[in-house]
Image 1 (cartoon, rainbow, N blue to C red):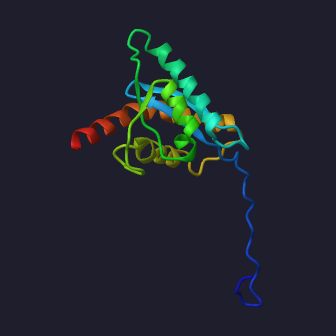
Image 2: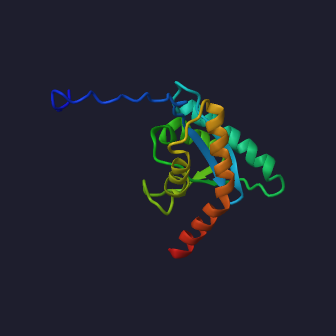
Image 3: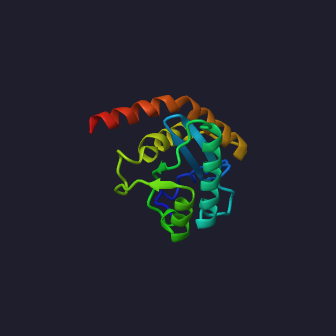
Length: 162
């Protein structure tokens, strides 16, 4: 329904180009850079089992990258979402010797990915059309590679500020 004069022409309808869709990326990183990027398959959600398998992958990657410099305990910071807070996940974290850091939910100082990484990535990919998921992943990873040093400078400045 629309309001118009009886003699005025109908408005043109534009065809919307179908997008490749949305998908979720889990990024695990530290001061040395990105260690693991996982793209959730379409139609799947992150549950305790899926997240626990990512943690095992991360532990293996950390052992590989830090052969002589790997400590027994890894300080770990993640969001307050059900898959992260589940008892099975907490047991897996303890088994892998990941010590979780307590922080306030939605704190900009302690959740740099949400406030400094993902908004810039979303802005970079906004209004671009991709024909496949592979193109989206390639564009995201290219942008992430270029922004990592900038992100660490921001984190360092936030740490010095407090």
